[in-house]
Image (cartoon, rainbow, N blue to C red; front, side, top):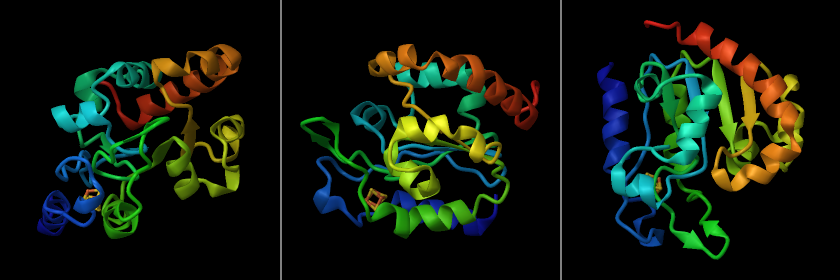
Length: 196
Ligand code: SF4
Protein backbone atom coordinates (compact mmCIF):
# COMPACT_ATOMS: atom_id res chain seq x y z
CA UNK A 1 0.00 0.00 0.00
CA UNK A 2 1.37 3.41 -0.88
CA UNK A 3 2.55 5.79 1.83
CA UNK A 4 0.08 8.38 0.46
CA UNK A 5 -2.83 5.99 1.00
CA UNK A 6 -1.61 5.07 4.47
CA UNK A 7 -1.22 8.75 5.33
CA UNK A 8 -4.81 9.41 4.25
CA UNK A 9 -6.08 6.51 6.39
CA UNK A 10 -4.04 7.79 9.35
CA UNK A 11 -5.54 11.25 9.01
CA UNK A 12 -9.06 9.75 8.85
CA UNK A 13 -8.45 7.72 12.00
CA UNK A 14 -7.23 10.84 13.84
CA UNK A 15 -10.15 13.02 12.66
CA UNK A 16 -12.00 15.10 15.25
CA UNK A 17 -13.85 17.28 12.74
CA UNK A 18 -17.35 16.80 14.10
CA UNK A 19 -16.51 15.39 17.54
CA UNK A 20 -18.73 18.00 19.23
CA UNK A 21 -21.76 16.59 17.35
CA UNK A 22 -21.11 12.93 18.21
CA UNK A 23 -22.51 11.15 21.28
CA UNK A 24 -19.30 9.11 21.70
CA UNK A 25 -15.69 9.79 20.85
CA UNK A 26 -14.87 9.78 17.12
CA UNK A 27 -14.05 6.27 15.93
CA UNK A 28 -14.10 5.88 12.14
CA UNK A 29 -15.31 2.41 11.13
CA UNK A 30 -14.34 1.57 7.59
CA UNK A 31 -12.35 -0.87 5.51
CA UNK A 32 -10.31 0.22 2.50
CA UNK A 33 -7.42 -0.90 0.34
CA UNK A 34 -6.48 0.35 -3.14
CA UNK A 35 -6.77 -3.23 -4.48
CA UNK A 36 -10.50 -3.50 -3.61
CA UNK A 37 -12.82 -4.15 -6.55
CA UNK A 38 -16.17 -3.87 -4.78
CA UNK A 39 -17.31 -0.88 -2.72
CA UNK A 40 -20.06 -1.14 -0.11
CA UNK A 41 -21.47 2.36 0.30
CA UNK A 42 -23.61 2.37 3.42
CA UNK A 43 -24.98 4.95 5.82
CA UNK A 44 -22.96 5.16 9.06
CA UNK A 45 -21.85 2.67 11.73
CA UNK A 46 -24.34 1.85 14.46
CA UNK A 47 -23.58 1.52 18.15
CA UNK A 48 -22.66 -2.16 17.78
CA UNK A 49 -20.10 -1.45 15.05
CA UNK A 50 -18.74 1.42 17.15
CA UNK A 51 -18.25 -0.95 20.08
CA UNK A 52 -16.72 -3.84 18.12
CA UNK A 53 -14.88 -1.81 15.48
CA UNK A 54 -16.24 -4.16 12.80
CA UNK A 55 -18.89 -3.05 10.27
CA UNK A 56 -21.77 -5.40 9.39
CA UNK A 57 -20.93 -7.82 12.21
CA UNK A 58 -24.63 -8.43 12.87
CA UNK A 59 -27.71 -10.10 11.32
CA UNK A 60 -27.79 -7.39 8.60
CA UNK A 61 -24.22 -8.30 7.70
CA UNK A 62 -25.07 -12.02 7.67
CA UNK A 63 -27.87 -11.34 5.19
CA UNK A 64 -25.65 -9.08 3.08
CA UNK A 65 -22.98 -11.80 2.89
CA UNK A 66 -25.65 -14.32 1.86
CA UNK A 67 -26.83 -11.94 -0.87
CA UNK A 68 -23.24 -11.61 -2.08
CA UNK A 69 -22.50 -15.33 -1.77
CA UNK A 70 -19.29 -14.75 0.22
CA UNK A 71 -18.04 -15.89 3.63
CA UNK A 72 -16.83 -13.61 6.42
CA UNK A 73 -13.18 -14.08 5.57
CA UNK A 74 -13.73 -12.84 2.02
CA UNK A 75 -16.05 -10.04 3.13
CA UNK A 76 -13.54 -8.69 5.64
CA UNK A 77 -10.62 -8.92 3.21
CA UNK A 78 -9.97 -5.28 2.24
CA UNK A 79 -8.24 -6.43 -0.94
CA UNK A 80 -11.72 -7.51 -2.11
CA UNK A 81 -14.29 -5.30 -0.38
CA UNK A 82 -14.01 -1.64 0.56
CA UNK A 83 -16.61 -0.69 3.18
CA UNK A 84 -16.91 3.10 3.12
CA UNK A 85 -20.11 4.52 4.62
CA UNK A 86 -21.39 8.07 4.10
CA UNK A 87 -20.32 8.99 7.63
CA UNK A 88 -17.45 7.12 9.28
CA UNK A 89 -18.37 7.53 12.98
CA UNK A 90 -21.46 6.49 14.95
CA UNK A 91 -23.71 9.57 14.72
CA UNK A 92 -25.99 8.75 17.64
CA UNK A 93 -29.70 8.02 17.76
CA UNK A 94 -32.89 9.84 16.93
CA UNK A 95 -36.43 8.74 17.67
CA UNK A 96 -36.76 6.76 14.42
CA UNK A 97 -33.40 4.93 14.74
CA UNK A 98 -29.82 5.93 14.05
CA UNK A 99 -29.14 9.60 13.30
CA UNK A 100 -28.15 10.55 9.74
CA UNK A 101 -24.47 10.31 8.84
CA UNK A 102 -22.54 13.47 9.74
CA UNK A 103 -22.47 15.71 6.66
CA UNK A 104 -18.84 16.80 7.29
CA UNK A 105 -17.50 13.34 6.51
CA UNK A 106 -18.18 12.94 2.78
CA UNK A 107 -16.53 16.17 1.56
CA UNK A 108 -13.63 15.93 4.02
CA UNK A 109 -12.73 12.28 3.73
CA UNK A 110 -14.99 10.18 1.57
CA UNK A 111 -14.25 11.98 -1.68
CA UNK A 112 -10.44 11.75 -1.38
CA UNK A 113 -10.71 8.16 -0.18
CA UNK A 114 -12.88 7.07 -3.12
CA UNK A 115 -10.36 8.69 -5.49
CA UNK A 116 -7.69 6.54 -3.85
CA UNK A 117 -9.61 3.33 -4.72
CA UNK A 118 -8.91 3.07 -8.46
CA UNK A 119 -9.92 -0.57 -8.91
CA UNK A 120 -13.56 -0.38 -7.82
CA UNK A 121 -15.75 -1.99 -10.47
CA UNK A 122 -19.01 -2.47 -8.59
CA UNK A 123 -20.52 -0.15 -5.98
CA UNK A 124 -23.30 -1.51 -3.77
CA UNK A 125 -25.43 1.42 -2.64
CA UNK A 126 -27.24 0.94 0.67
CA UNK A 127 -29.72 3.45 2.03
CA UNK A 128 -30.99 6.84 0.99
CA UNK A 129 -27.92 8.90 1.89
CA UNK A 130 -25.62 6.75 -0.21
CA UNK A 131 -28.29 6.72 -2.92
CA UNK A 132 -28.43 10.53 -3.00
CA UNK A 133 -24.63 10.65 -3.27
CA UNK A 134 -23.98 7.93 -5.85
CA UNK A 135 -27.23 7.55 -7.80
CA UNK A 136 -29.33 10.73 -7.54
CA UNK A 137 -30.75 10.04 -11.00
CA UNK A 138 -32.71 7.07 -9.58
CA UNK A 139 -34.81 9.26 -7.29
CA UNK A 140 -35.05 9.57 -3.53
CA UNK A 141 -36.79 6.34 -2.53
CA UNK A 142 -34.89 3.12 -2.00
CA UNK A 143 -37.65 0.97 -3.48
CA UNK A 144 -37.88 3.15 -6.59
CA UNK A 145 -34.11 3.00 -7.02
CA UNK A 146 -33.91 -0.78 -6.56
CA UNK A 147 -36.67 -1.22 -9.14
CA UNK A 148 -34.47 0.65 -11.67
CA UNK A 149 -31.34 -1.38 -10.87
CA UNK A 150 -30.74 -2.48 -14.45
CA UNK A 151 -30.25 1.18 -15.51
CA UNK A 152 -26.99 1.39 -13.55
CA UNK A 153 -25.84 -2.23 -13.60
CA UNK A 154 -23.08 -3.53 -13.58
CA UNK A 155 -21.17 -0.51 -12.23
CA UNK A 156 -23.69 0.08 -9.42
CA UNK A 157 -26.40 -1.82 -7.60
CA UNK A 158 -28.87 -0.05 -5.27
CA UNK A 159 -29.88 -2.43 -2.48
CA UNK A 160 -32.60 -2.44 0.17
CA UNK A 161 -31.22 -2.48 3.70
CA UNK A 162 -30.45 -6.10 4.66
CA UNK A 163 -31.78 -5.58 8.18
CA UNK A 164 -34.17 -8.22 9.60
CA UNK A 165 -36.49 -5.25 10.24
CA UNK A 166 -36.93 -5.04 6.47
CA UNK A 167 -38.73 -8.42 6.24
CA UNK A 168 -41.93 -6.80 4.98
CA UNK A 169 -40.02 -5.28 2.04
CA UNK A 170 -38.48 -8.65 1.13
CA UNK A 171 -41.93 -10.28 1.22
CA UNK A 172 -43.47 -7.55 -0.95
CA UNK A 173 -40.67 -7.72 -3.49
CA UNK A 174 -39.85 -11.39 -4.18
CA UNK A 175 -38.42 -10.41 -7.58
CA UNK A 176 -35.43 -8.95 -5.75
CA UNK A 177 -34.26 -12.37 -4.51
CA UNK A 178 -35.34 -14.15 -7.69
CA UNK A 179 -33.95 -11.78 -10.32
CA UNK A 180 -31.34 -9.48 -8.76
CA UNK A 181 -29.42 -11.74 -6.39
CA UNK A 182 -28.41 -14.39 -8.98
CA UNK A 183 -26.97 -11.62 -11.19
CA UNK A 184 -25.23 -10.05 -8.20
CA UNK A 185 -23.71 -13.35 -7.10
CA UNK A 186 -22.48 -14.13 -10.63
CA UNK A 187 -20.83 -10.69 -10.81
CA UNK A 188 -19.24 -11.07 -7.38
CA UNK A 189 -17.77 -14.42 -8.39
CA UNK A 190 -16.04 -12.78 -11.35
CA UNK A 191 -14.69 -9.94 -9.21
CA UNK A 192 -13.69 -12.20 -6.31
CA UNK A 193 -12.64 -15.50 -7.86
CA UNK A 194 -12.90 -18.39 -5.40
CA UNK A 195 -9.55 -19.26 -3.88
CA UNK A 196 -8.30 -15.70 -4.47
S1 SF4 B 1 -17.77 11.38 11.30
FE1 SF4 B 1 -16.17 11.80 9.76
S2 SF4 B 1 -15.80 14.01 9.92
FE2 SF4 B 1 -16.84 13.38 11.82
S3 SF4 B 1 -15.20 12.89 13.30
FE3 SF4 B 1 -15.76 10.97 12.27
S4 SF4 B 1 -14.29 10.81 10.55
FE4 SF4 B 1 -14.28 12.96 11.24
